[in-house]
Length: 322
Ligand code: NDP
Image 1 (tube, rainbow, N blue to C red):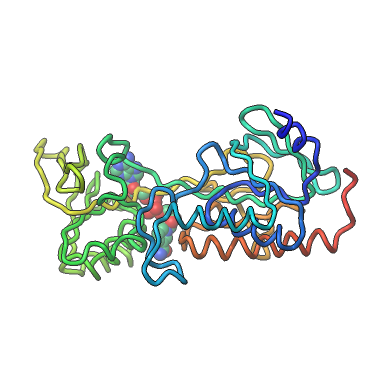
Image 2: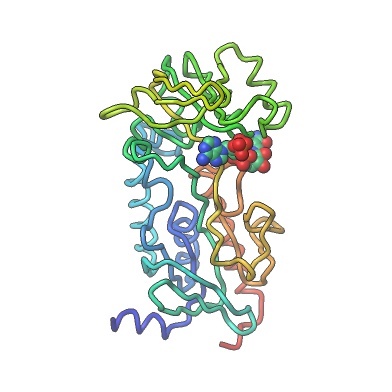
């Protein structure tokens, strides 16, 4: 209680909101630049890597590393340089560079800073099935780039009808011997761009299954199949697959800055000059502004950029009147 009171009285140079690879990397950089840094990690800190098992494409780990271990290492490194961690959900940000920024959290605490880095990421949308949740990281994934490698010569299914689903399916043919694309509507309803559709249609390893919903994911310790339902024929059957990739979109975690920062039509934070937002003194990093790359390493690099930009901004601008 005393500890929190002390932090609420302090004025931080930077408050970083988000504790995935982007926020943690930003913290390592701001704290090493001698900026007094508070990192608001959320009530379940760690980001998407916490639901990933093996990460094989983060440089410097030739034997791979578990997602939660990678995050724990980054956190330890940030703590070493003095980042202060508070695991509370941020519910709003108000203020300006001239007046200072005030961040309010879900438990009613209030923290003040001269600058802000928003690194709250984006959450993959899921189908919402109980067994889908249970088998996440055990054959259920939302990232083919991350997990496709584990499905060499296996049969997998991708759910969705947008560009992401086409891209995931096409990427998965590098590894899997067969890839089903399950789409809940008909061929003419596909949302994906023509070129991405054509690429997927022309690949003999990809089979489209239209008008079909996933009713359940089957398997004890690992995915073994799915129960699917065709709404046109009213037919329900089991499709044997070794993996399920859900590609039904992502939701940027920006609800708490709606009205404070400019967002694009899909809710991602609009940027200019790499990490700047529509508010002076507020920077952004990672998947909350990037729907294109969505990788731990790109989010980490983005966090480094935001930290350098915040540091230079604070060094060059007149100090705020707080
Ligand atoms: P989209 O919103 O474009 O597509 C989501 C798809 O998932 C839709 O086909 C939708 O079906 C389906 N869907 C949504 N909810 C469910 C559900 N509960 N059950 C089953 N199916 C569901 O998302 P994407 O992630 O594909 O793309 C997001 C943005 O990123 C787009 O602008 C896209 O162009 C872009 N992008 C670009 C890429 C590239 O250029 N290389 C690669 C990936 C994405 P329905 O059609 O019925 O609504």
